[in-house]
Amino acid sequence: MAVNFRIAVHQNSENLHLRLGGDFDGSSACQLLEVLKTWRRFASRVFIDTNGLTRIYPFGVSIFQNNLDPLGDNRCIHLEFTGDHASELAPATGEAH
View 1 (spheres, rainbow, N blue to C red):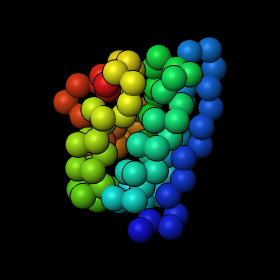
View 2: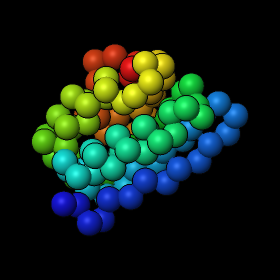
View 3: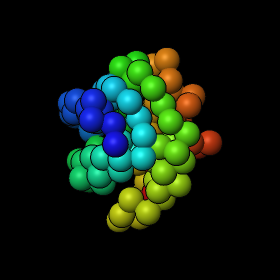
View 4: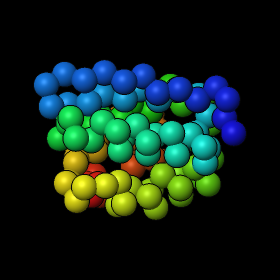
């Protein structure tokens, strides 16, 4: 469990901004999925900034990417990954259902 993982949340209009920091492992992936599930009804676009990540574990990426689809209410939400580690976390498509 990455004890140094954190998520800073900021919302403006219909956009949600998440700034990730620390190590991204399986438990970090679960935390990020919970934040997305909680906030998805308030935003149509989510920007996920990966610049603050220090280590990214393949298991965490797998947990995150494999659990994006069952986030909830069948409403599509556009995820946009930014930062140095965007390509490591981003699924093949930016849409989550």
